[in-house]
Image (cartoon, rainbow, N blue to C red):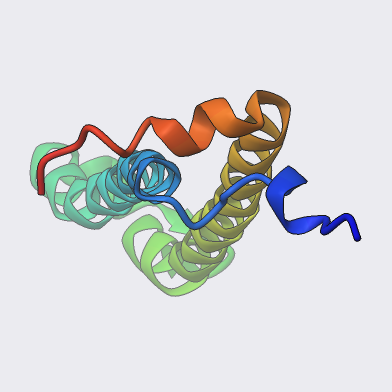
Length: 113
């Protein structure tokens, strides 16, 4: 009786998981850096451009408009992009392992932990 198990790629191998985690770490760092630029950028804008940041936008100063209105949608956009890109990375890794067959599962055998 033929078993489908040997034909399936090993998506739980050390090589697969290490590669995926490395790519997701890069994505996490990029998202965190984007968040920090915005978070630290607002006080810097207030310091270097006080006249601009005191301008009125929809009844608020630009500082409060950016902090109270624009900040949360920006965080949602970062979160949405992270989730979408993370899922795409996982799917791409699975496809790569599926195409490589046994090649992908051999990559982790020589690794030293």
